Image (cartoon, rainbow, N blue to C red):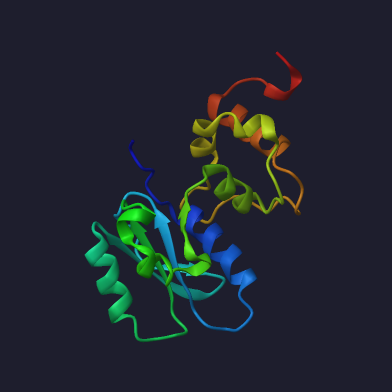
Length: 168
């Protein structure tokens, strides 16, 4: 199975969600099961720097954890290892004590400022990749409404097709 590559918008969504759950002001180590590469440069979430590293082995993950000396730092570790390979001691040091998986629709919803995604759209994961925000800053937030009409409009724009929501 080929793991997905981590995009800035997908990681921003994960970090934002974990920051909302964290009330003590301490940084966290977030493990994400994905391709263990990061070439997008520095990640900033809500004005705060987040370090992102790729680790191709359990030993590399252990080294990153051992070298982390700032308890306020947010660190995202991208790894292709599963939880069993990492071991309970490593997984126990990750936020929520688990590896996150990349769910493309989560990043799309976050980029639109939406609370959720229509279940019919979730059945088409490849569509999410088309709708991830461009690197120039993303789409305007939709005011917390469900993603649906915004996506339909974007797909129609990408395909240069008539309004897909009209059924024809």
